[in-house]
Image (cartoon, rainbow, N blue to C red; front, side):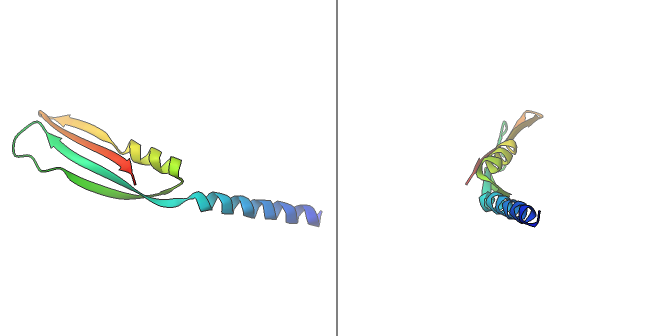
Length: 82
C-alpha cells in the first residue's frame, strides 16, 4: 500500500510539472483604430501579458478583439499574440 501511494504521488508531481512547464508568458498586442470622422485619435497599440499555454493564450487574446460603433464613429481593437 505504501508503494502504491508513493507511485501515485510521483505521478501527480509529474503531471503538475508537465502542465506548468507549458504555461508561459505571452504578449497580446492590440491595434486600436478609430474611424468615421475627421480629427479622431491616431491608431495606438495596447499590450497585455497573458500567462497560459499557447493555445489558451491565443484564445484569450483573440477574444479581446472587438468592434464598437457609436454616433457614426467606429472603434476597432484587433489583437494578435506575440
